[in-house]
Length: 70
Image 1 (tube, helix red, strand yellow):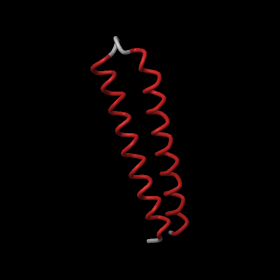
Image 2: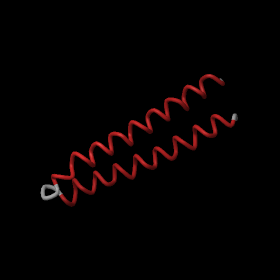
Image 3: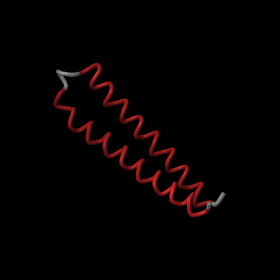
């Protein structure tokens, strides 16, 4: 396995962990603090979207690199 693919795998794992953590924050807001904390909803939702998009982009790069070496 090439170093590039290993690096991309690490990036995918890292971005997936960050996206999961952000999703948990959104979940906690929804489950525990709404409707009182509705003012936080847009910021947390946007941060969650961005974290998931970052993971998706990293994952696509990994998949493309894996396909190129197959």
